[in-house]
Length: 392
Ligand SMILES: *Cc1c(COP(=O)(O)O)cnc(C)c1O
Image (cartoon, rainbow, N blue to C red):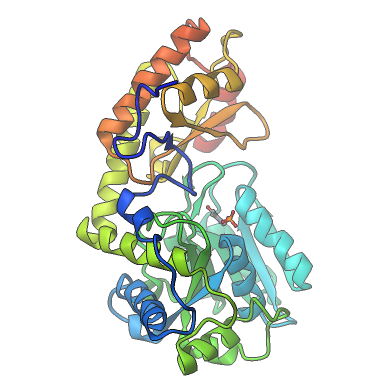
């Protein structure tokens, strides 16, 4: 039946998810033609894609290069780890959620050494902890930080992690998948060897590739280090430099959509403009849902403008599935939570949505609670106990 809150352009539900996310009509429309992978037109598109991502970096960017890799974001994380961590290297993985743990698992597959600092569901890894671990374990060659850990939505303190890493003379790798393009990330200031992001997060493209932005000297030095043919960053870079082509079938339509998405990001004022919109989205949905009695997992200090975790209400009339279905009928796809201790759900703030849409999300949530007969959206006492750990 008709959707009471349709996307004005397509009648699709809004994806309140961290990617794939709601994209602009113009981005989708950019995919309505075919490109030959070795043709000059497509080679120019690949060149533009690489150059334009580097211009988002600011001063010092000439020391870095951009290497796109086919696949989802995890392919890029694996490419980065396999290409830059030597076979006898060891990585301190700073985990506070699923993506940190996935990176550690990836290193296990690659046979690289791992020192896992697992902070649980959402506690931030702090600079002092990193410094202590690095001082105690001289075998650690690299530190891997997750910029925004999308599992809980926490914005990790990459500045203090980078300072501790630099002070100990180790190399820094960053998974900025869900942050780059909106949350500031200055690889020069952070002295970062490489970081990764993907097409379908804050740049608001469609899925199909990710990209590694790495120091040129590190890319050159990575020759022959990768465990993988398809995920060898040096080999992909060398081919792109020589021929302008991707080594294997490129995601042509996704690249076309991404260039349109970059135009729109630039028109919005680049990363600062996008950050402002996402921040307003977050503030609107957090204030609105708190008014309804919902509580966020994280204190304001750690809330990212990317995705926010809310506790499920304690009221027995509430169920995640019931809430999900009621929100979907109103045109909004929400996201399940990923906490191990208490039930939660997540609301993404990224994608082509603004504060007016987020106000409709709040209205839809109020209606959904009514429909379910939920009297109070207050979380269970166990959730608030859990949250006290953050303050400790
Ligand atoms: C999305 C994301 C990834 C990659 O996930 P894919 O499903 O492979 O695209 C990695 N790290 C973080 C922090 C992410 O948000």
